[in-house]
Structures are given as C-alpha cells and as structure tokens.
Image 1 (cartoon, rainbow, N blue to C red):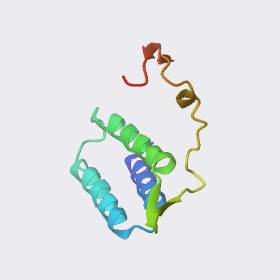
Image 2 (cartoon, rainbow, N blue to C red):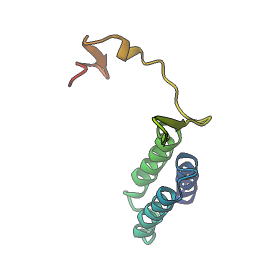
Image 3 (cartoon, helix red, strand yellow):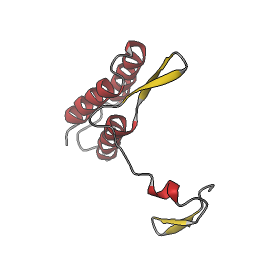
Image 4 (cartoon, rainbow, N blue to C red):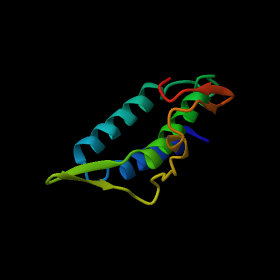
Length: 111
C-alpha cells in the first residue's frame, strides 16, 4: 500500500470517528498532515516507510471501529455509534476475575 492510500484512509477514518466535532476533527487532520509532512522527503527505499504505512493503516482501522463519541444530553450521554463501530459480545468480561489466555500468556483482569 502506498503512503497516499494510507494518508487518505487515515483522513477518512478521522472524518468518520469525529464527524460533528469540528474542533477535534480539525486537530486530527492537522496531526495526520503534520505526521506525513515530516516524512515526505524520505527516499522510496527507506526501511522505515513500510512500518509507518502499516501503523497509519492500523490507526485508521482503530479510529473507524473503536472510537465512539458521546455528548451529554441533560443527565444522560448520547453515543454516536456508526455502521463501522465494533460491537463485541464482551465474553472476556463475563469471565469475571478468572485468568484468561491471551496470545499464549495467562493474564488476569487486573494485569
């Protein structure tokens, strides 16, 4: 994947995640642009480019699926959940204080 594709995916993901919040969306756009501008003069064969592009794609995926914004509406909060928001079943939460195996290692809920 090219840097341009990663840049576009990241910008679109920010727009999805922060839609309706102009201040946060502007800050996200500026941060994304600054990050890409800092590396724009790297040679095409630089070994740091591929991991940076992969990181940008991971961030874009995370923004699309895991960031949910909420607004206070009186005494409650309204969440803006969109079609890309990940909806898990929280199976590991239902296990309580048991040790669970993640990536081959046993983890406790407080670890």
